[in-house]
Every structure is written in structure tokens, then in C-alpha cells.
Amino acid sequence: MSAAWLIPLFTSLASLVFGNSEADLVFVGDAMQHQGQLDAARSGKDYDYTGCFDAIEPLISLADYAVVNLETPVSSPPYSGYPCFNAPPAFIDALADAGFDLFLTANNHTLDRGARGLRKTIEELEARKLAHTGTYASDSARAKSLPKILDINGFKIGFLNYTYGTNGISPRDGVVVDYIDRPAIRADVEAARKTGAELICVCIHWGDEYKLLPNTSQRHLADFLEAIGVDMIIGGHPHVIQPMELRPNKYYPEKNVLLVYSLGNFVSNMKTADTRGGALAHVKLFRGDDKKPVVQSAGYRLVFTIPGVPGRSNYRVVEADSVKDAAWKPRAAEFCRRARSIFDKHNIGVPEFKQ
Image 1: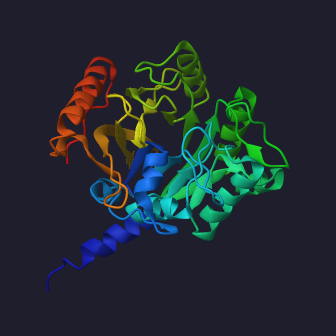
Image 2 (image 1 turned 120 degrees about the vertical axis):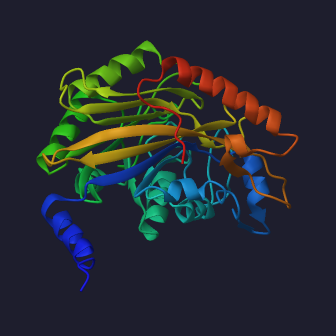
């Protein structure tokens, strides 16, 4: 009799004893809703995002867990684009259907519809049982939610999310936004570790818009996060890509740190060469014989938004190299050329990911 049946049994037992040896994460940048996107998705009184993420879904499905920055409230009508964003619930349905698991809500547009809009966004996410972090309906809700430690293929990961600001709008009526504050971040990281997090991921809204390189403030804050032992630092807000690094931690050389200054836009209707697209970061976690989890490798893929036409087609996110439409192929090629010039020159240990 063949002993082949013992292999999956042994694998399952080993998983129970040691934890799974690998896990894959995907991070993307800013999921935005400008007026053009809303107009294209409108179907009578409703909104339909069919096809928006179909081309990119296979890349998202590669991961055990996928994270997106929700850069818009999802509140009650009327819906609107820049400068005061508000998207219909169908938008988060489309993102969830594409495979996203965790929605980041701490960004500069989170209070575009005030406290009511913040609470409504959380209600819509929770009604769909979608994980979220960064904003909270109250202090007690924050205390209940954090530390957010998720078990992903046996890796216990603490996720935290902060923003530099909220466009001058202050939280009211008891809602809470996690702003960048070093003592608070340190306390949150320590609490996550004490509660069992093996790895810490800080997703942070920072930097200068439209700048392809990080500013001094970003570099200093990244150094602080590295010094307190954060394992993954994932940035957004500039609306363009910025460099990525995977290397030994300067303060704890026995572990790696992944630093992504900006993933750019995941989906938007911004119009310059650098803002039409962004990067998808694919991250592999590994647990060796010593049972210690590490961020083993990371790579990127470039994505690009092809505009839709109201009443005919939605905006579509595609792999940037796959654009064949004659009107958009030259723009996608220019985006790729400029993004790769930055990554080729400045990335450390994060190559372009090939399937």
C-alpha cells in the first residue's frame, strides 16, 4: 500500500505544531472615487462597478490576505468626488469581491463627510463583515478594536493605520481618527506585541503629494518605526509611487524590515503620467526551523487605471504592461517608464514581481 496518504496528514500535524511556514500578503495604494468614476458607475439610481477590478483580481487572489487604502467615506447620498469625497456602498462591494480583506480608513479624506460620514463608513464595512482599522466610532470602539491582530496562515500580525491629518477637519461627536503621534504609535505597537502579535505592520498616510521621492519627515518617521521594531511600513498619500526597501533592520539585525514609502494610486481619475497608476506590493512571510516569522521577500507589480465612459463602461484597473487600447497604451508606457526609473535607482531588495 502506498504511503502517499501520510504526506498531507504529516503536513497538517506539522502545521498544528509549528504553524504554517509561509503566508502571502498583497498591499495596494489609494482607492479613490472621483466624479468621473462615479458617473461611469452610475446605473439609474444605483451604482454598478462591474468589470472595474476583474483584470487585477488574479493578482489579488494570489495572496492569503489583501489590504487596500479606502480613500473616501462611504456614506449616504449625495455621492461626490474631489474635493469632498463620498462613494456608494457598491464601491466597497466591488473591492471586497476583488479579494480585499482589510480596509484602511485613516487618511486625509476620512472626515470629508464629517463624523456622520465616518460612522456610516464603519457601519457599511461592518455590515459586510469586512475588517478595517484607522478610524472608530468612539473611544470605546477603538479600545475594543485594538490591537488588531489577525491570524494569517498561522502568522499573528498586528495591523495599525495612521494619517498625518484630515484636511483641517477635526473629529467631532466622539469619533476617533488615528493621527501620527509617536508616543501613541509606540504604545500601540507595544500593546500589539504584548497581546501576541509576532509581526507588526504600520500602514501610514504621509509625505508630499506628487513627489516621487520621500521627504525628510517620512525618512525620520520611518527610522522611528524601524527603531521600535515595526516589521512592515506601508505608505500612501503622495498619489505617486515612491521607493521600497527590504533589508535587515538597523536596530534589530536579526529581523528584516519592509519599507514602502508610497504605493501610489490603486484606482482614481487623476490625470498626470505619474498619478494614473500605482504599485501592488506582494510580500512573503516565512517561518523557519527556529519558528521565528520573518518578512522573507517582497516584489512589486505596476497597475494602471483606464478611464471609463458614462453609460458604457467603468474605469478599469489593469496591469500596466497589458494596456492595448491605442489611446491609453502610450500613457501607460510613460507611467511604467517613470515608475521603473525610480524603482531601479532607489529600491533595495524589492524587485519587480514576475508570476
